[in-house]
Image (cartoon, rainbow, N blue to C red):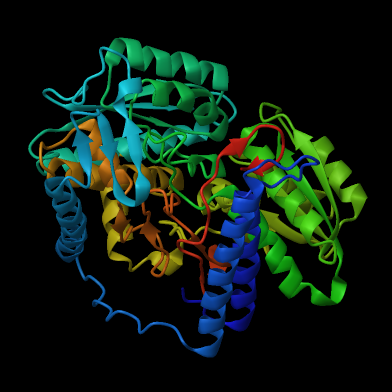
Length: 529
C-alpha cells in the first residue's frame, strides 16, 4: 500500500475504516444476531491490519517496491507485457487445476477457485452447457442504452465493437472471432429484463455484459441462476463485490461507496477551517443514486464533526431538466454540492450551477466519476465547469491533453478513427475499458486445460492481476477470489481546468488495493452486509 503524501494517508485510513464498517453491515440493529460477534472480531482484525499498513506508509516501513519496467514505446511492447501478465495467471491456475486445487470437480460438479471461490453447477439449468455460445464465433450478449435520456452511453457498445474488430483481425481468441450481440434497454430496468431474457432464450450467448446499475440489479439474479457469465458490468455499485452470493457477476471500476467516503475524507482534510459543513447531493432516483446517497449518509452519521447535515435532492433520470432540483439546492446554501448522477444530467447540473450562482458562490462542487469524459460533460458547459472536483477512479481520458503521448491512448484514438468514428466521443474509449478486460480473461481461459469454457472464464475473472492500459500508472486492476472482489481500488483526486480543457490531478494516488470487504447488498437501506 503506497500513499504519497500526508493528506492522502489520512484519506486512505478514513476510507479503509469506513469500508470495513460497511462490509460488516452499514445499519445498526436493536437485536444483534449470533453472527455479529464474529463479524466484529473480523472487522477489528481488518482495522488493525489497515492501521499497521498506514503506519508503515507514514514511517517509511513499506516493502521495497518492485523494479519498474520501462514504459512501453509502442504497441508491440505493450502487447508483449500483456501477454507476460496473462501467462503468470495461466501458470498459477494451471498448476492449481492439475493439482486438483482449482477447477471443475466432475464428481461434485463444483468449481473451486482461488481464495475460497466455489461455484455450484448443480444449481444450473438442466440444459446448461459449459461451452454454450461458442461455435464459429464466441458470442457475447450486450444490453445497454442506445435510446432514451442516457442514449449517449450507446457509444460504449461502439467501443466494444471497435476493439473486437481489432482482436478479430489479429486472430481472435485462439483463432475464434468474437461476436457482440447488442440490445437496446434504454437504461430502463424492465426493458433490460426483457432484452436479457431474449438473449438467453433466443441467442444463448457465452456471456452477457450489462450496463447501468438499475439494469444490472434487475438482471444479475437471472444470469446467476442461469449460470451465465456476467463480466465487467458497466457500473460501480458495491453490490458487484459479492463473489459467493453472485459468483457469475463481476464488477469493473471504483465502487460508489468508496467514492462517497472519499468525498467525505477530502472535505475533512481540505475544508478544516469550515468544519462541520453542510452537504447537498443531487441524487439520481434509482439504485445507482441510492448507493451514493447511502454512502454519504453513512459517512455523515459516523463523522458529524465533518458533515453536520447531508440533504439529498432526488430527481427522475428521465426528467428533461434539473432546473427545479438545482434551484432547491442553491437555496440551501450548503458548503458542498455533489452530483450523484450519470449521463446527460451531469452536464445539466454543471450548467445549472453556472446559471444559478452555485459555482461563483465559493461552494465546493463535486461530480460523479461517471461524468469524467470532457467532451460529453465538461467542455460543453464552458466556463461553468471550471473548478469542479472529481474522484476520478484512476481512469485515463483519451481526449485529455495530458495523455496525448500515451502509447495506448494514441493506439485507441487511431483505432476509433480508422473505424470511422470520432475519438472525441470519449464514451467510445470508455467502452473499450470493459472489452479489454473481457478479451484478456478470454485469452487466459483459452490457455487453461480444457480451453475456453464458462468455468475457466470465471476462474480467469476471479484471478486477474493486470496492468490496465486505461488506468493511470499506480492504480491496480486486480482481484483475489473471495478475499478481494473489487478490481479497482485506487483513485486520483482531480479538478477541472476549463481553459486548458484538462483534469488536473491533485497530489498523489490513493491506493487501498485489497482493503475493501466483500458486499452482500441489502435493500433495507443498510448497504453492505
